[in-house]
Amino acid sequence: MAYQNLISEIKENILYITINREKALNALNKDTLIELADVVVFAGKTDEVRGVIITGAGEKAFVAGADIKEFSDYNGKQGEELAKKGQDAVFNAIEKSSKPFIAAVNGFALGGGLELAMACHMRVAADHAKLGLPEVTLGLIPGYGGTQRLTQLVGKGKAIELITTASMITAIDAKKIGLVNYAVPQADLISKAKEILDLVKQRAPLAIAAAIKSVNASIDNGNGYDTEIEEFGKCFETADFKEGVAAFIDKRKAVFFGK
Image (cartoon, rainbow, N blue to C red; front, side, top):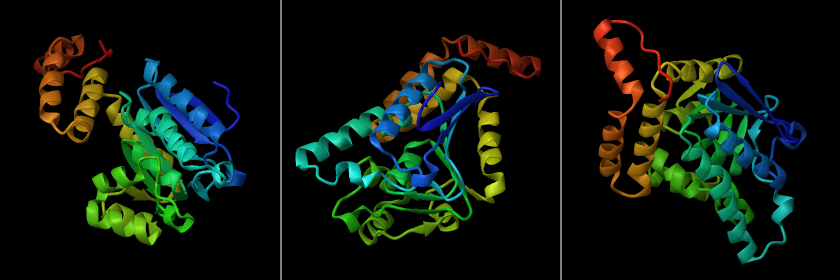
């Protein structure tokens, strides 16, 4: 996969995506969003990929926001379309992917950068990283799901505080409020994300996908219990279920094939 703004490679069933615009602090411009949309589709349809790690080039920024110059003269309709396209093609697509995505936050995660990290299923941050949604300083609000996902992760009161004050918080504080799963030294960032996915890779792929779908349903449709029941039943029809039970009875390690 050859991209202009991304570096992507698969190693040991993990797809590593690096947003490669270091001089622009990895800001999300239109071309980068198009490429992200493409690689998310690739991850979803490629059996070799069991999980995804997204990070930014360098140590200064994961993604320091969107490329403001590209939409500085937009009107209301254009702004709405910008948000809708981005949410549908990238941010929601990541959240709804059957493959687990981990954001490895290696520096500033601001605006669209924090929204990208929050769209991922898990977040690991370097302990020097800073996170925030500064859109109100531009006369805007978060447009790529930030108001919704931040509220889901940290609660209404804290979300409103962070959004309306435009305050940045450290990775350590982000961990305390549940915004990131782990805060680790920069040198350990990718290895920690890999450590999580190495555990995921040992589990049944179809069950992983069913679990992600069920968790998302708790927010998306207001009745995640029905989705959980349905997905639980579907698991019984898989070869992975039969293998998992047989391995448990035989006291051996299960070998899953996602079937």
